[in-house]
Length: 511
Image 1 (tube, rainbow, N blue to C red):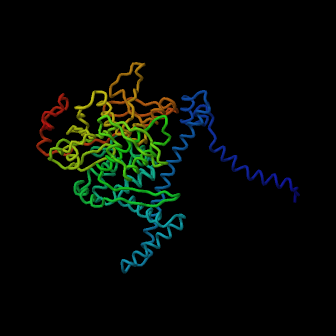
Image 2: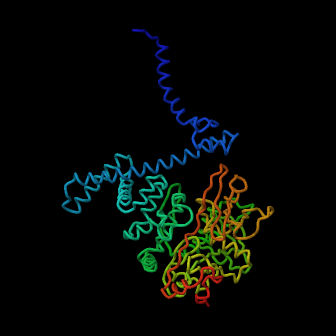
Image 3: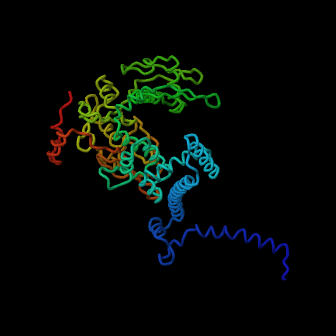
């Protein structure tokens, strides 16, 4: 037997430890960048060579983004496999367990299964219970969602949103909601970004709006039931802090939020060191602890008021006369009382049309009525009785975009600045199709970060192109034709789509 020294043994141990690392490095190392496709380079490598022929760092950045996207798709496929395994586990456990003789015994069996899943996944029992419930919903009632999750085109967060928004819907309504977002062949499919390209919070917003519009129980009945649950909640927190939250009717909540936000923005200045969020909090506390709301937020007569900050009692500044402007999109036939479909409150979503009628009848000056086309749900006009054309254009941008048009941004900012897509100095016009209304953060990103907005139309906001050349679509409101009585449908269908009046002459004028 050949003898080995201690140094040789150490060298062998080190070599065996390093070899897997080297192999892994080869597995993820970039392929030859300038070779032919026959030499082992992939299509993506070839495209990178075309896009970045002399910039290896940009090629590496592009590869990292591709790998991140593939990892995300892999995580979605793993989540789908987990769902199927859990469904199989439930099936096997049910077959092994003796039939429950009482509700208490059934509950005990369910608790035992939840505990077993929690221990296997090293999660809490509440998390395990939610996972069991979500897996059951996906495997029994949401086949399109599970298929998209398996394909990697939908994330686990998106799938959970779909489960949440179809909860308590009858099977037909749940199937319709799922089909609207995931079946391109369904009648009136979702428009704009595919569901998987929306960030989960925006997808939830879209799904909730569609759910409210198509819920089998009218929003009027559900709102009347829910308004009885209005409440104010208090919850202590760490570090001498606490949470105070209010569950209110939507028009009240939006009105409070916009009023406080407008006052907080009005305090901004070179001597103001608080953030917008901190100013909102201070203003709310000042009002609730006895501040005079009329002095705090003047009625536009030109007077000013003072706000005492809660951080030491100092005077934060003089408040000008801010007015929060909210757009209220109302189907004209619903406003006339012919139907009870919901109106759309800017920054919130669907509200009962009775609430919209009350806001208009009460002459709420911060709400502007927007009528919609009875054929496709697109906005028809914006009341301009108190606005010059430039402000009406800005309001139209808010209608078209719904928010900041940057992908994933949910900023409903009331003071976003209109931005030319093609600069004025380069021949760009000041028309809706050449305007966007990004929030200050993404407006700055456009001019400093290399991101470029794409073309827009009167009805579609611009998509965005990243510095690496990737294009990301922008979401936009998912308009739908309003519900119309049969005689109005017949009258509208008899009109030519090319008619310059678009059927408006057949709709009764509002007073």
